[in-house]
Image (cartoon, rainbow, N blue to C red; front, side):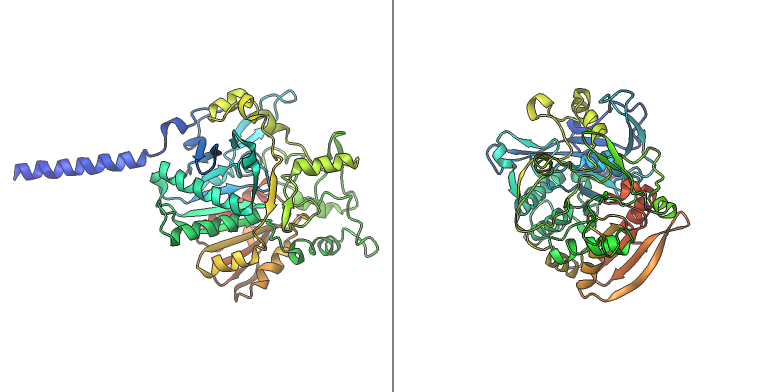
Length: 473
């Protein structure tokens, strides 16, 4: 009997050790122990580094920064975050929107920023992966820049391969619910990647990703009647232009009609002074540090509609604007650039130095093609298969107006299960929500511009956490 007891104890010990080994699956070389500019203790574990994709010669190296949940990392969802562009780094979301820190400008121009904990970080309730995608964006790179010639389909395939390798390395998170999220041009990145993930699940590709759904914020659809035709009616309906000036709206900051607009290189600020004071107050934020001058996340589109074929990147738009002796408005990424181009920061986050991959900038020049068509069918296919979808819009974004998003979500023909109603945050009306069958939810955020968590961090964390937990918004 004693021998049986010893055997049982040995089995239990072996099972415990195996469990511990599984929990420690994250690569030790990826852990981030410190970050220049921050002097406190991380509220959760951070990891960063490269996932190498060997499908091309030479390989593609996709950079990620992974923040464990501050609540319960082994049970909370894993969320992949993608910024738009195309060609813009997801450090946009990390630095300016919902990352674990608020960044304060250094004392001198281009000096190292000071980092403070963000009370409204999305890592309060979820694990979150910030991915620089596609190759050539942010800190992702290849030794052969022909790999920077890409499009929607290849970007989705590469991001799916990234996820498969990532979940191999971080196998302890393979059972967590997994969601894909992003904003602006990620309105194309997200549903196309979600579709690749679903294809992989049907083909029984390993590892199995526990995919549950996706989120899109102020996202394009590549459907002219929704992305393009909503702009002028939105401006007119908001009382920003008269009937006579219906087609004359170029003086506004289209990415947040309530905010001043920063123009390079003169640092000129243009405020829409004709707006009543009560209307301007809608854009106020609880951020401990002010909203960046750059305002909008340099997010696609800039007075354009996504159509089949080449899609100009932001550096290309800048070049076109300079040729015409005008500036693309509201462009200032000084804080993020100063931090991510500091060699001590690169070393701390295990990124290649500037001497190898060049300087970081928020949006990179890519040869990018839109080749996935309209997103409407992608949304229909995904939601009809039971995957949850949250479509959210800042209601003061004139880049991708909420009216266009409201129209396309209604165009799917789904039965309305939760009629248009206000939703609350901090005992205040924070916007409006409508729920459809097939787990589709559309929500607006009152007074938010194109990058919702930047303007309304408390409200963004509220709707994000409620939706992930399956609670009513």
